[in-house]
Image (tube, rainbow, N blue to C red; front, side):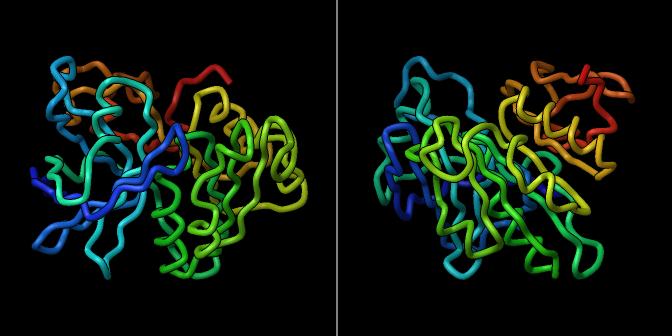
Length: 258
């Protein structure tokens, strides 16, 4: 898939809570085609300590408005600068990068999309595309507290939504792998993104119930094109760069000790 380096204009920026901002970007020309699970590398201007681009998942693509949405966790100097952007500002992006999630091959396939923390980011666009192709979408979203559960209404537009919180303030109490849904229903495909221990737990579940599962890895990335080798992951095919061969992998290709 062809890659582009574009100066995109900030259409709007919304502070969802003290940890997260939603940045909506647009362009005068139609945005390039993008797949769920791919990411962009953004240049952080105005930060004297941020030298490398930041990899950010494609949260959503609004084709009618010609908008690309980025869900950004504000955790460091670079992302703090991104959170200070205003409508009309320009953000330079290299996109689309990496390989995304699998999509339904036939109508009616049941997809379970599992996300934890900022790992929910690639699942909104994934859910939209699964639904568009006739698949049945269920989201299972995990967070620490109800305040950390983001974009609920947006997710509900594309499928059923189930929630777990560690403190029980919303949905079922506990981790996503403790949710009663997993004991009551079966799916044709599970897609998961979030902290590695959570993804490993979902892989164990998928292996136990013999369900196909894809994981979106969050290895540290710098270049986004497989040149710097800082995001290498061991697989059954040898060491690969997550930014180029992933970030989405079938669980059977990984050498995780789960």
